[in-house]
Image (cartoon, rainbow, N blue to C red):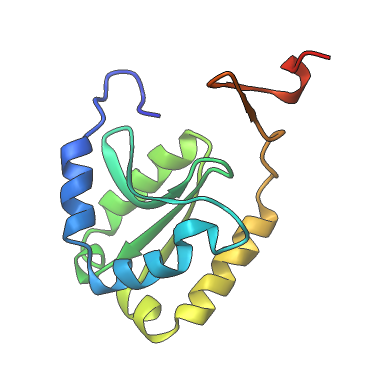
Length: 139
């Protein structure tokens, strides 16, 4: 998923998952295991040089949880968002306190955003250890 010229920062992603904020942990408990609209999310997933808090590659949705440091770093956040959107992703941003104080409202907002996203292509079936599109299935 990384863009040309960017290595996947796997070690940094693992470190961020291990040291997640309370808000990130709370939202992950809602998103994990396809609990929201049956959509799979990854946590701390790299897109280019950025590691995004939560990403659904299927529907191309990024969810970012912002702490106080983002308030004074709005220009950098805007550049990051533009970079991610240029790769076909929509970006939702929530404040830490919003997630911690109103998780139901945050999940409802995510569900609405998912409903507005284009549906993913045809599901892939596993055949002989490889993924195939339905039209590739022998008749």
